[in-house]
Image (cartoon, rainbow, N blue to C red):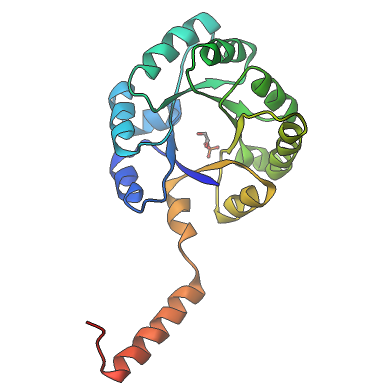
Amino acid sequence: MQIFLDSTDTKIIADLASTGLVDGVTTNPTLIAKSGRPMLEVIAEICDLVPGPISAEVAATTHEAMIAEGKKLAGIAPNVVVKVPLTRDGLIATAAFASEGILTNVTLCFSATQALLAAKAGATYVSPFIGRLDDYGFDGMDLIRDIRTIYDNYGYETEILAASVRHVAHVKDAAIVGADVVTIPPATFADLFKHPLTDKGLEQFLKDWAGTGQSIL
Ligand code: G3P
């Protein structure tokens, strides 16, 4: 499973990318607003930091305007993935991008039938929002599972990008049910490394090692 960062904080992205474990980055208008920086500049910088797919979201709502915006975004760098909302216009734009070889990430997906349409439109990625479904009393992971079944039934190549991920358990469950990618906030990425028994075990090992008086180098 690929791991993307859901962030526009270029300092944090650079730091986490240095682990070699970050496969791509997703952004959205809210994250761009949080950065307080011009979108085109931030996306270009992220594309330089991470060679993998970088999602940049259109702000238009008609397919004609989405296509114009998407082409501009795709021109920033070869690794830009144009992110479009899962609306009728968004899927018309997705099909147009697919016919021109422009990669797409169809976002704000909340149902399996929406995901079916995204695949039929030729989306590169579909982004089901797990956390926001959980917030409303649904089980976001059920959606990932259903989409996996549907895509496998028909051999759709659209990749399932589990989004709106809130914690480590979401990452684990998304991997178990077969999401292709998970996009996570930097704090969740940091949490993936942690386990109290790792800390406890290491503390003991280091203490015992110090007691030997040895050094490896
Ligand atoms: O980028 C889309 C998604 O990951 C948003 O997450 O936490 O705002 O629901 P969240």
